[in-house]
Every structure is written in C-alpha cells, then in structure tokens.
Length: 192
Image (cartoon, rainbow, N blue to C red; front, side, top):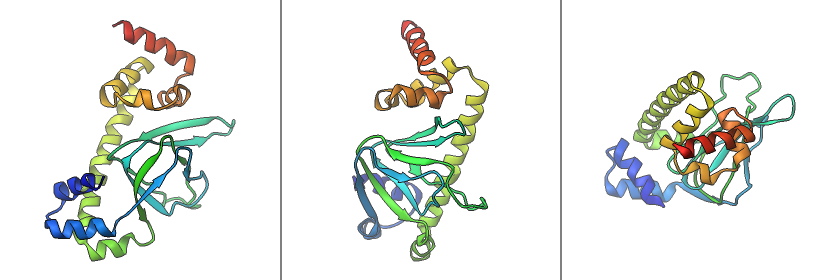
C-alpha cells in the first residue's frame, strides 16, 4: 500500500529514497470498516485523508431530510473538508466509508508541524490541491452544462468502475436524477 505514497512523493518532491522511507514510517495509516462515519455533518473537521484502498461518500442531509450525494472518493484521492472560511467551522457534509478502507490519516491541527519538519510535503500538498481544484472546476462546469445522460456517460468515461461500487440510489443522487431515471439512462446507454 505504501507504494502509492512513494509514487506521490517521487512525483511531487525530490526526497531521497531514505527520506521517503522515513516519512512513510511516520505516516499514520488506518483501516476502517464499511459503514464507518469519518465526519458527521455539523462537526468540525479535524482530520484529512488520502485513500490507499476503498471508497468514501460525501453527502449532506437537506432541509427535507434527503441525503444528497456530492462526491465519491476512491483510491489515490485526497479527502478533506476545507471550511476555515465558515463562521461555524462545522462541516456541511458527512463522510462515510462505502467499502472497507485503508487511509492515510492526517491531523489538521498538526499539519503545519509536519510541513515545518518536511517543507517539500507542503509543496507537494499545494501542487496536489491546485490539480484537484482545477479538476473540480472543470467537472462542475461540465456537470452544470450537461444533461443527466451526458453526466452518466462522462462518469462512465472518467470513473468506469465507480458504478459497480456504489448503490444506485446514491449514484442517482450524485448525478442529480431519481433512481428510476438512472435505470432508464443506463438502459439507453447500454443499447448504444
């Protein structure tokens, strides 16, 4: 599993092999069972994650009590709720493990200490954040400008394995359609 970490350390830093092994030995890696809640909506986020194995769902419960899925995170994706700008500091989302997960876990309160000890990690984090933000902007613009069927096709293209990993009702919520509409879309797309 730590091979994934070495891949990112090599891509974004110039740490020697020895420095990489030292950093990897200090990094906290935890296993979480399917169904584990990592963060409840309303709680103040204290941790960040990087997925080595598994799938995490991000969702919010709206005013009518419906769960609205806003993202799924899978292998080699970072999961962090940035809300320092918010008055309450409480998360607008719940994060839950949809599968058994193996995660790199970072404590947001001590992250600056880690960056002070290993300045290249801050550079790596900043580069990854810029890449993720750019991707999120593109995905959001595409999402807003596309039909539900186009969203589904885009998901098939960009994240083909996700459809088998998540329940259809959650996938439908993520795509902004009902589960029945998603079934019809799947049938139309499968005939193409």
